[in-house]
Length: 216
Image 1 (cartoon, rainbow, N blue to C red):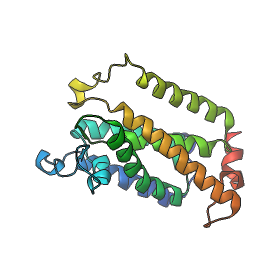
Image 2 (cartoon, helix red, strand yellow; image 1 turned 90 degrees about the vertical axis):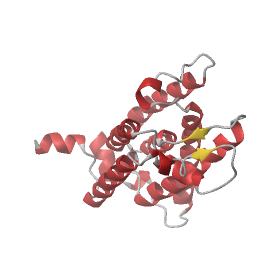
Image 3 (spheres, rainbow, N blue to C red; image 1 turned 120 degrees about the vertical axis):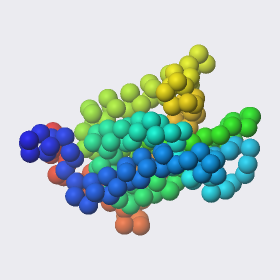
Image 4 (cartoon, helix red, strand yellow; image 1 turned 30 degrees about the horizontal axis):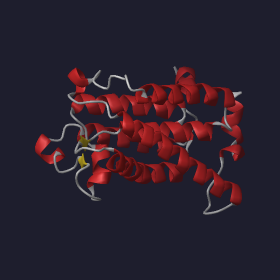
């Protein structure tokens, strides 16, 4: 059992896994907020910059919607995201909601609403893939091809974004996925540039010899 857990769970400090577990519990709990409360937290593209640009990404269409996103968060955590340093994770948690909301605000022609963590999820996925380039390049290429293919498929004119309508009660916001992936890539790249230049105390994946050895 211990060997199975060691193979499944990334070799990271225990406190990172504890913080991650608490975050998942929080996101899941927010999925059960009453509709009257969520109406004050969701993003509305017809309104200007407000707290909704942040809060909308941590509320959902319902409990099932939140559970699906939490499941996705767990999968990505085990694959790549756990390896990101806490500083980068915190930056992503703050930057992704605002950058995705800004993208939706600019690109959506008609008034609409948005709630959910899936856009940010794509951002964390993209950032994890970039970070993972120095840990396992073959694995990184595989995940990168999957992410790119999924985003391209979602952006095709004939893509049906109603496939989860009966389950979560809303459309799949494919543009949030695109903006999330772009934002996550930019944030991770800037962080790595700072690490390369020795700025702001940013650490780099190429200096983490232990995860590299574990992946070979």
